[in-house]
Length: 141
Image (cartoon, rainbow, N blue to C red; front, side, top):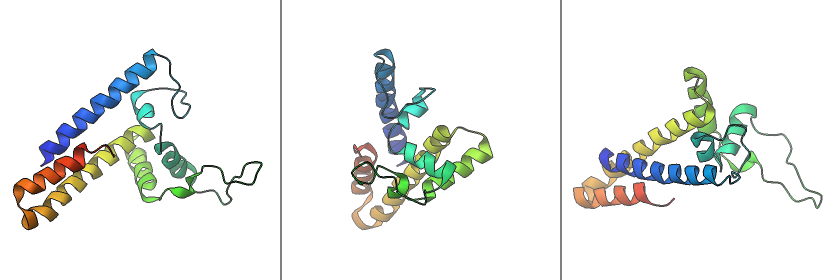
């Protein structure tokens, strides 16, 4: 079961690494500006930017709005446990937020795959449970 998870992480990391190489070579702008465009900051170009902001500064007391009074994209849409946990791992290890976040996300992903298997195997059998884990691990989400 963990072998399925590990293979899925190798494949998805290779795909993301390929996209990073292409983006770097063609000088694409990242989803968020980075002063040091590394593989880990590239992998953090989406929601992890908001998680990093929560980890470093917490939640704002007021929501920012545009000129029309519409609420701007902000960290209030994101739950606090992941960024706080990554902040603690980063503080304990000295790792950058994006590296620590990748490690925490991978550990919880492996745990989720294991729990899915343990929940399903007694109910549907080993092979269907392994298929469910594979679909979970290789799914595009």
